Length: 229
Image 1 (cartoon, rainbow, N blue to C red):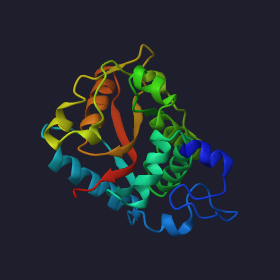
Image 2 (image 1 turned 180 degrees about the vertical axis):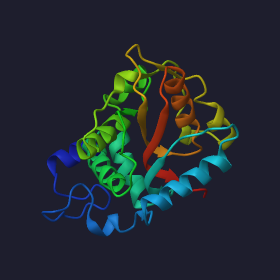
Image 3 (image 1 turned 30 degrees about the vertical axis):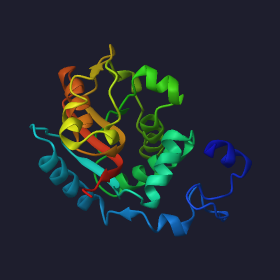
């Protein structure tokens, strides 16, 4: 329904329904001002490291990391991500990816990256949604930092429940063993991308599969990092 509404009225905000100006895309400036944005890429990286260290029970090392926003329940950002993920407005993901790419260019994260790998959906879930939101975000990043997107390097081999529906202890266990590297030769330096990081368990499981297949460095990027409510 949301996608049909936006097809009929493409110049309205997906969050509040107000008319967009010529420079606004999908979300109006007033709603975007309600997003809880990190002050700098370095702050985002520091907070991400601390969040994963305190929420994820096992050792999970990653080289660098970056997020744009804190994710809060009932925040305007949640509605925008919901429209992207569940209402079929996948192009919002590309816009978020472009913003995240520009954010990363303010740091030295892009540096010697070889490619970008989106966290994959299980094929049944991808059939249900018709697209992978992490892949759309990765495409936006790739266009901005001029790095190739390589979704074939990682696949999800086990269907898992949505992390949002699980209590924290089960979130940490839910994605374990869910990923497997593809058959292509594995690059050394990879940026792993998802929409929202909660405990870091999904990223840890995906990064483990990439490293087991030969990746030397795995960097993380997400549109948002879930805040403890």
